[in-house]
Length: 266
Ligand code: SF4
View 1 (cartoon, rainbow, N blue to C red):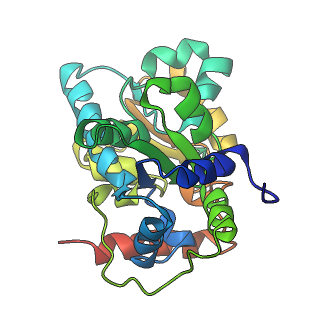
View 2 (cartoon, protein in one colour; view 1 turned 135 degrees about the vertical axis):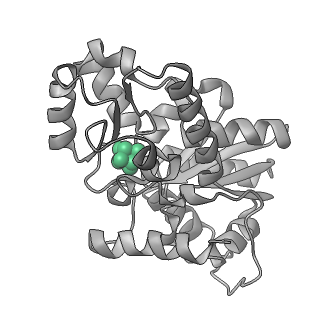
View 3 (tube, protein in one colour; view 1 turned 180 degrees about the horizontal axis):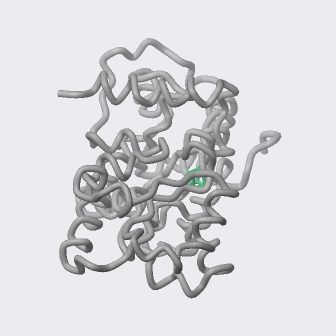
């Protein structure tokens, strides 16, 4: 066994060794740690037949959120793509569970799409988030998702020294996202789902970072004017996730996500 491998990275190496049918699902912050399109080609040479953008699943997350808001116009909602926030609410603020949007996260939505379109393939999720590992195993065990961080992926590439970085300029995602490529930035959900257009400033709030998240959750029952809370646990959003390799400033990371989003606009 190679050194410094997490159990998830080792599990991926075992699956690759067995030549299992695998789909890679890349969170939209991948552009901070890896180059596009080279990363798609490198994942395919590693052994993934299909490479998907998680931002595709985020389109379904947005649709489900908007359907929920339409069905229950007066209902107050706390967004749920961040598994750390979901766990904070379950453990510390259980009286707020009733407000959590019971909809798919981008990870589970993408995995469901893969199960439908590519039966027999195992979804492997790559993101900067450690807690997605718990979301995969505890919240969606039936989807059989293997969740790794970008640091885990770098360790797998390191272990597979024969899968070197190449130009791979023609590599393309097999499943693509859209506006939702902004999801890893705080407020990306609110913007891409239309909440910023459809609700007044008083009716929605965008919060990131553990201190502010805790404070707004404590205050939420007393702020009845606040209808939608778009909330992520890491400061600035998933671009600050602990499984990220980059040591760039937050503003540089944010810029990379925005640049990729702009470059893929049709
Ligand atoms: S904000 Fe942080 S904890 Fe929440 S999903 Fe993103 S990386 Fe994970």
